[in-house]
Length: 275
Image (cartoon, rainbow, N blue to C red):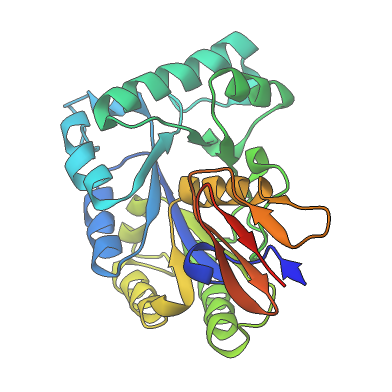
């Protein structure tokens, strides 16, 4: 039996992070992610990146800080409004102008969005489609490891202030129950929250969490939001012969599946035949 339940390099589990607003503390946070070989998506309000009167990340910092280290930059709109309270054209403008500014700063094609305040409406999805945005992250934690059917409603596992139980369960699954269906641990937040003296997870505690996850890095795929999205889309495009013995991957992304409970690689633009 063939199961579509594996990620890159045949791993059953993946780990991703998402941080909003492009605030100054992102400089320290990205250093931690680099230290512990994590991947993250950083969501920027482009109004901030050219405003040199604030302490936020500036445009010329983005490539060396994030892109060259393998992280993703995604939209968070220009001005951080409640999108669902706006006309559809204005929603589109907020997203598309943000995308244009971020693409200029990063030299990459921007395809993701984190909803400001975590809110959205039906017209928001139309605006996203028109702006060629393929996924949208909410702030509605589900405390599980499943991926969404609709990536425009990508609910994270947990906020970092509440992540310790989910991290423990994730590590248990990776180390003690690798036979399970697998899944993604998705942690989100704002880096300025680590400065809050009353927060349950501050800088030192968060580094402990990352260090603990790092010990088990061979058991999961550390990826950006977009890398996970693209991998899942590639997996959905695998074609099978009528007898189920040939599998063809028409994409430019290597995909892994389970065959007889072992990982089987279907390389980009390759056909694999099984017994």
